[in-house]
Length: 140
Image 1: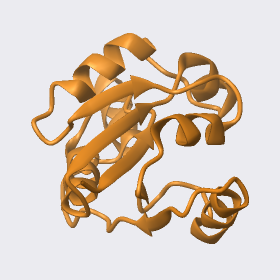
Image 2: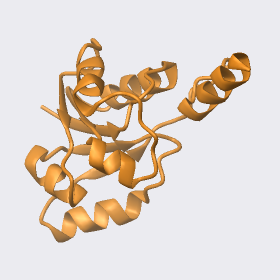
Image 3: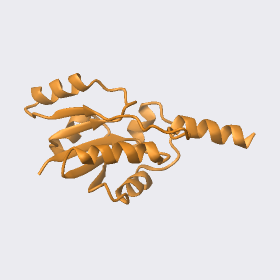
């Protein structure tokens, strides 16, 4: 069984997230989604609306997701070591380096493939930032 790990904040759940998770699942048999903890989301500069538990529940309700957990508050590799996926997927706009992640995993004794997912092709605003912009514009 091939285990795939995807991660993100998932504050305003949208079709871009669904696309990312569906593509992630297509690479394996079991999809574990790591939802960023409130601490890490804020540390990363996110102005989150929903709590980590609410975001985890939303993600876990999606058919494509086999398990959803809240990530830690420290080193991301602690979570990777706990899950031990065969593949880590990154969203097309996530600011992580695939090679750096793969090298650090190897350094820690884990042979994990890292894949970058494709963007959703849509004319509708689907990114969290874009949705916030549209909502703010319509509220004025």
